[in-house]
Length: 532
Image (spheres, helix red, strand yellow):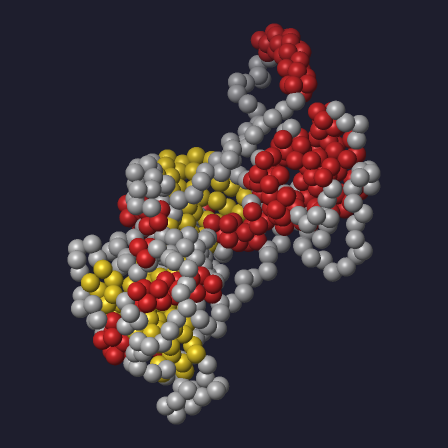
């Protein structure tokens, strides 16, 4: 993969606003590029193009309709001058590379400018394309490959434990895990999402350019005044002269409620319901329109993307598995909700609700105002009659099969209580409260299992066992029926003095687990007997 292709892929994965901040850009280059991808001099040249404002100047010219070659040439000359360098060809090459990374400059143009840059690395031999090049200016980038299908569901054959509760089964001591962070029943209510605000674009222009602009304005203003005086005298005798402009001016997108409701029907039946006012905002690379609305509980940002690929890239930047999230990621439209107080009860970060529509190539994001909770933000989502439905139970097929295997019913989706979880639900089993969750990575499940094992050891191994699938239904474990998951039982003490018996069961193939609580009898063995 060549350097300009690597930067294009970097922008797609981390967001093209990365190119607006020199320090963040430099850090990303150091982390992302291989050692032989670019020389230190070339990296410094690319970073200086951002730090000295040449890249921002080029993007302003391109957004105003300037020809790509002209924009690269002018910005490159400016960059060389500000660096005190005679390597104008290298400066233009750097601007062309950044232009390609944002989808504004073609591959052929980058290669042409590279021939003027003596220190640019020699391209590798031609081979299969590893990254789709961005389109020529004015067209939309191609969408990325579709996401892989979810993992295979867990086996649905009958469950068989290895034996009854065995207090004599030894276990290796895992690394200590704070017990307070696990196992506690989740709160009754749930909430939304918070994130750091993006850096503002820095408009840095050379003083020479500022002086030239001021001089042009002064001279031009004088000429304009003379012309106006002359025209004014002529107009007195010209009966056809009329007041006001003779051609319409571009006033930006129509942000009236009626127009927005019509344009954003793919997101909601009435997306402006409850809004106080809306105004056009600065669209970023990959966006054709951005509108910001305000309402008493916070703000709403509506975005239209230039392609499905740009929408999908923005979606993946938004969705995550942070503690306190509820995520539904389906191709037609994703839903994301984050409550910062789940991880930190005293958090002052705002809750956020996000959803999108692939058919409309649009997204909406609600952000709570200061002191607004996720529960208070929910009514704004309900009011607009969104086209995306929040998940009300387990959505992962493997989790659904896991629940069926252990007769888990009446599940209600809640925010994840552990970082790395893709989903968590509060359910019932034999009338007992039971929490079921799934991790994105098997190592995260192993760490959570380690905590349950430690608690069981502290309680003298009340329940230590494993289970397997008796595929041939002969009542015993055969060589081709390996262990499927672990079983641990322990006692959890509450602040009010109540002691709960807890039964933990997991499935490594599914990367999911359940925790079943008794009614305060502090007897996990009875829970074990209920299931097995």
